[in-house]
Length: 242
Image 1 (cartoon, rainbow, N blue to C red):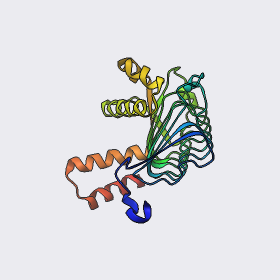
Image 2: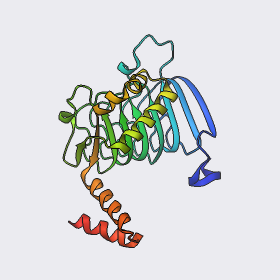
Image 3: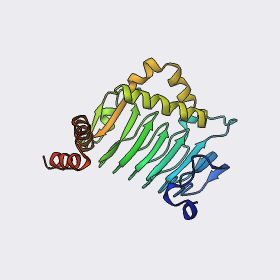
């Protein structure tokens, strides 16, 4: 696909491949736009490594006797170095989820330690608990974390990030993303959240890198003033220098 269509890839879901069972390491690595890989079963480490625009879906079998959101659906270091694409995982994963992610959207129902470590772009939605040291070295992108027990603040590494409440745009994005997660995975967690959305949306926290937030604010102000691209870049550089 990449040889023929280059970086643009194909329209989403042009090619769909369905799998069943246990996938080994690096399932869906470097998949380009236009390819969707759907796995009924579970996956090992490095799922979605270098994802380049494709879509990955992992869910347990419908007849599984286990509660999906309590079970590990994939291993460690998911979406390492991903640049674009989407990942939907019905279940929890191990450590270093979305480390070095720079552009992909990833949805999961719980993560281990060091989630979103060194992340530089993209968006992450965690519909369950997180481990410690969340957001360490995170310089870009946005993460949304469901904080049901109210203890997420103790799990965050605040050296480079801030934890905020959602605004209207966040709520709109989050609801649409959870609806998509439900459509792809049949997630019971997503279904419960959407059924009580007016209550559940208030339990999410937004993790935003401090410098990234400042850049976005400067760009928004420049756009409101009608500045050119060159002038906007200059304004951003001045902001970075303090």
